[in-house]
Image 1 (cartoon, rainbow over the protein chains, first blue to last red):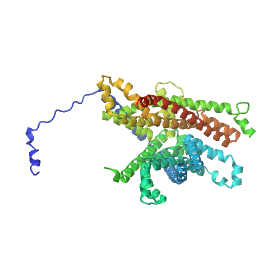
Image 2: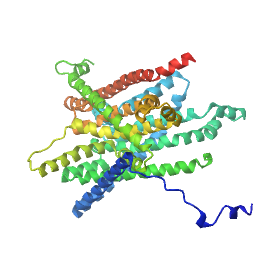
Image 3: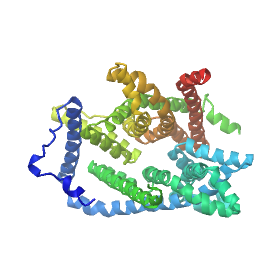
Image 4: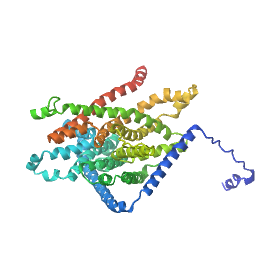
Length: 280
Length: 241
C-alpha cells in the first residue's frame, strides 16, 4: 500500500510517449471547419453591421421603447403561463378521470387548442368575440373583451393550459402503479398518496416539458404584435415601419435569443439541482 | 342560420371559394416545406453525431439559433432581410430595379429552417437509440458506409423518429398560419378578409379553426397509415415468432 506510489512512478527519462494520433485533414474535417468558419463570419458580420449602423439618436428614441416592449412580453408570458398552470390542473384531472363525460371534455379541449394555430385562436377571441359586441354587452363582458391585452392573456392562457394539461397528465401517468399500491399498502389515504408520493415524482418528469412549453410560449408571444399590442415584437415592427432600418429586427432577434438561452440554462440548472438525489 | 350558410357557400356572395383556395395554399406550403426541412434536419443530425468536433459545433449552432428565435421573427428576418440583401446585390450590379420576394418562398425558407432544427433533434435521438452493433454488423458483412446507412440504419431510424416527426408536421401545419402576416393568401388570411368585409369575425375565424382541426385529423389518418407501413416488417417477425 505504501509502496505503490513509488513503484508506479519510474524515472522520467525512461518513459516513452505514445506516438501522436494521426490527425489528417479528412473531408468531414474540412467541411466542419468551413461551416464553423461560415458561422463565425456570419456572427462577425452581424456584429460589424450592428456596430456600423449604430446611431445614437435611434438608440435614444427606441431603446426605452424596446425596454417597455420587453417588459410587456415578459409580463404577458408570466401571467399567462401561471394562469395556464392553474387552468391545466382541472383539465388534467378530467383527462385522468374514468368518467367518460369528463374524459371527453378534457380530450376535446386539448385537441382543439393543440390542433389549431395560436394565431387563429387569438383572432377568434379578439376579433371574433369582439364582433359579438351586443351579446357581450348584454352579458356584461364587453369591458373585458374590448381590450386587446385581456384577449391576448385569455388566448395564451387557454392555449398553454391545454399543453400544460397534457404534460401534467402524462407525468402523473408515468409514475408506476406500484407507487400507488405501495402507498395504499402502508395505509395512506388517496389524497396524501397523491400529494406526497405521486406528485413529487410526476413533477420531476414534467420539469423538462414545462421548460420547453415556457420557451414555446415566449416565442409564440411575438404574435400578439399582430393584434396591436406593443410587446417586443410590436415595438420592433413599429420601429421598422418608421425607420426602414433592418437593424431593428436584428436587435429584436438578439434580445429574443438571449432570453431563450437564459431560460434554457436556468432550467438546466434547476433540473440539475432538483434531481441531485437521482444521480448515481 | 341561412345567412351564415350563404356566407360560407361557394356561390354568389359566398366566401367558400376563396377560403378553399386558402386551404390549398396552406396545404401546399406545408407540403413544400416538409421534404426540404426533413433533408436539412437529417444532415444536421448526422453532423451532430459526427466524430469531428467542428462539425458538431456548426450543427449545434444551427439548432440553437433557429430554436431560439420566434418563428414570426425568423419569417420577418428572411422576408425583409432577403429583400434588402438582394436589393443591395442588384444595386451593386448597377441595375435599377425593385426586388420583391415571393412570400411563399420566404415562408418556405423560414418554416423550413425552423422545422429542420427541431427535426434534427428528433433524428439525433433516433440515431442514439440505434445500437452501435447495427453499424458493426453492417461493416462485418462488407457493406459500405452508405449502404449500411441506407439498408440497415435508415429503416430503423424512420420507425423510431416517426412519432416525433408526426408531431413536428402538426406544428408545421399550424405555423403556416404565420405566413398570412406577410400577405400570403392562406386559410387565416382569406378568412380574415372575409371577416373584415362581412363583419362576421366569429363565424369566419371559427371556420378557420375548424379547417385547421380538419387538416390535423386528415394528417393523423395518413400518419397512422405511414406507421403501419413502417412497422409492417416487425409485425411479420412477431407472427413468425
